[in-house]
Length: 166
Image 1 (cartoon, one colour):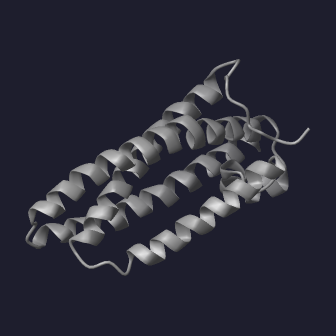
Image 2 (cartoon, helix red, strand yellow):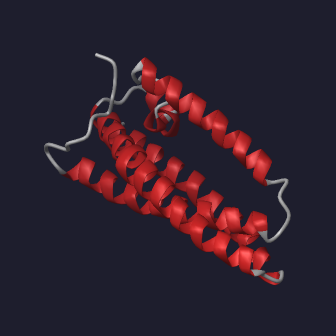
């Protein structure tokens, strides 16, 4: 049951982010059909670098990905029916996690939902520029999530905590 739960957790999260990359990538590609002025190019470069560093490196590589990988390995070793059914949510930290982390997870999710709604109101090419930065960060996240999950499932002493309550 642990193999199925861990696989479902990883595949569920990977699919969610992969779908977002495809969808936002299409919207971002639409921006290239408009004429870019100098401020669009400047914003594009600054935004992509900002998102690669803040979302990709700091958000995913230093925070989300190692923790999700640790929770995936924990799920592999400690499966239950509830964790199996809700494996992606468990791995992302929506339940059976420290109270502080759970509050942060829900708050971040609500913030992301609000930002998605706000960005959807932008006109091209601004929306495409914003979405391209998000795609870069999400892609970085998928790569690091895959690498950390492989490490967590194959290393005896994976150095990151799953942050589960005692």
